[in-house]
Amino acid sequence: MPVELSDLEKKLKPLPKWIFMTRWLQAPLYIGLVVAQAVYVWQFWVELVHLISLLVQRMPSETEIMLVVLGLIDVVMISNLLVMVIVGGWETFVSRLELENHPDQPEWLSHVNAGVLKVKLATAIIGISSIHLLKTFINASSYDEKTLMWQTLIHLTFVFSALAIAYTEKITASAKSH
Image (cartoon, rainbow, N blue to C red; front, side):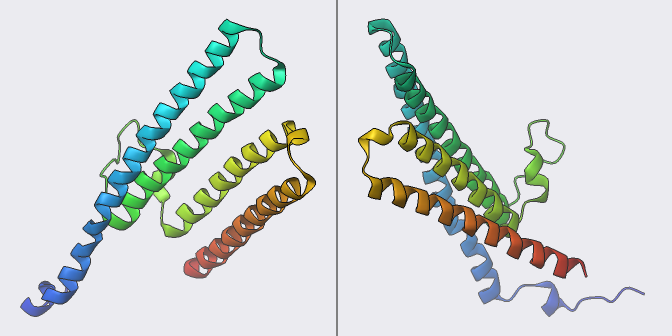
């Protein structure tokens, strides 16, 4: 026989209800990230126009083309990171997006939580860092050894941090399943 909740239990007390509503204070933050994404769309087109103007003016070197293309990839990866934070963060911390059965729902969104989002963000940051490191190594003659060393160490720190986050998430997930 189902247990009926008392009227007191059915209603949230004012303080917990108010605290729960404060999650909507994050809405302007996510809207701000949407604006930041629009800036990255603009940046992408500026970089693309730059590449096309290089091709029209003269035949750029392979290195010049590669650096501009890596810049384009970098902008796209940062934009992807923004989408993960905006969509995943909103879904996890603010309100459900109610995208079930929507043909464009990202596959990862169906099983997103704070831990999964951290792992995805960490791996995206590694990808972005990899692009920056590759750009640096392609143009290594323009940098001193100290800069090259620090960029490599920072990248390795991102890698190890992501591994630690993923391992912690795996332990947490397996503990919850038991």
